[in-house]
Length: 241
Image 1 (cartoon, rainbow, N blue to C red):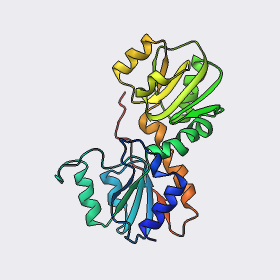
Image 2: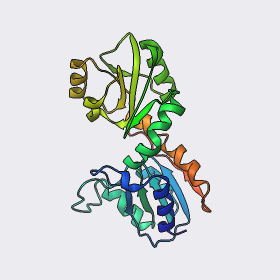
Image 3: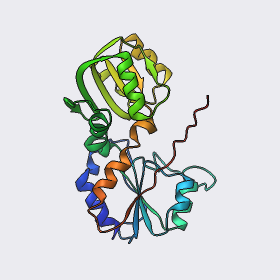
Image 4: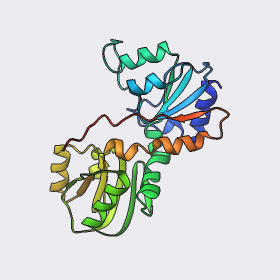
């Protein structure tokens, strides 16, 4: 298949026009006229993964490899070191980031993984009401997301409403109208702000909350007449006891 055919399929599934202005979803590496022989689906690209990808392939990731202004290609540094290997092996890349967050990923994690009843959404944010104790909620998050230790800000004994966005959503604090906000990459000053506003936050991890991207997309790609392989990248963090 040509990349242009796959791109059109992906655009129908989750329109690239929905991405945020700062995002770089779409074709990151390659040419629309390029013929590819198989598709790999991953959250990110890393060097170990690229070693196993066959030449003349297309990788579809959640996170763009190229973000912001790329002013040089220094092949000793990220991401140029990965781009060099991709060019040598004729590997192309399409990213589906904030557009896919809005159309698929957040809702899937909220409903299918965490088991919450989705009451409403606003761009990235899913919300529900219910009744959870602190222990019930934290145990649920640890079990469903595979998190051993959960960082929590301003814990509440009883939670009556929950909002969530996968990945890194702490910049959305001021838009949250709930007892508890679930997201990843919570920084120190995010925590200070949430605590001052009596907003409970639980850090559900960037990788841990978004790794389901591959499962969702791979299922949709089954209708295409080309092999789609799940080849997920590894979490760059190691957790030492």
